[in-house]
Image (cartoon, rainbow, N blue to C red):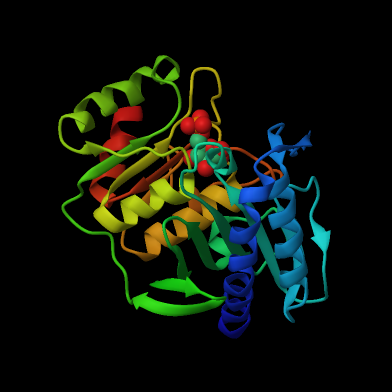
Length: 281
Ligand code: P6P
C-alpha cells in the first residue's frame, strides 16, 4: 500500500507544475457547476482532468472520486480508491490567494470511512509549491520543484502551544455554542483566515491552532465535503499529533452516505478540539 501511495504522490508532484502553470489562463468560470452546486472554473476542470489521467495510470488504483465529478469512476482493478479536491479554494484565483489540491487514498470503495484511509496529502500553490504527505502516523513536508518533491521537513507535529485560529462561515450563522467558543478563542489566539482550506489548515500545521468550518444555523452539515476535504485533512492533522471533530467525534469516525456528503469540520491541537466539543454539548 505504501509503495502505491508513494507512487500516487510522485505522480501528483509531477503534474503540480502543469496545474500551477495553467492557473493564470483559467481564472474564468467554465459555465458549469460541480456536484455540490458551486460554480466551476476552467482551472477546476483542467486540474481534475490532469489528476485523473495521472492517477488512473498507477497500478493499485481502482476508483477515482473528485469534487468535480458526480459519481465515482472505475479507473482500474486496483484495491485503492483515490478521492481528490482538484483545486480547493479555486475562488481564491480571482484575488490571487493560496489554493491547493487535496488527496485521500482509501483501501475501500467510496464512500468510505476515514478509518479506511491509508494515506492523505495536499499540494499548496502559494509563493512556492509545497506538499504535505501523511502515511500511517508519519507526516512529511516537501518542496515541489519542476515536478520533483524534495523533503523539507520530516516527522512533522503540530506545534504547541497553539498560536492561530481560522474560523469559516458567516458569524451571524454560527450556532450559539460555536459563537461562545469563538469568543474565548479570539482572546487567546491570532486570526488567520484565507478562504482556502489547504492554505488555512497548512497554517494550523505550521503554527499550531485550530481550523473550523462549523455547522451553521443555515447549513447544519456545514460546507466542506467529507470524502475529499475533511477526511484527508483530519488524517494529516491526527497523524501530526492533533485531533479532529465534526462537533461530536473524530471526523475519521463519521459515517458517509455519499461521495459528496458535507460535514462540520474542526481540526487542530487536541486540547482545543476537546474544548470545542465541550462547548457544543
Ligand atoms: P467561504 C473553498 O471554496 C472551500 O471549499 C474551502 O477551501 C474553504 O475552507 C471554504 O470553502 C471557504 O468558504 O465561505 O469562506 O468562502
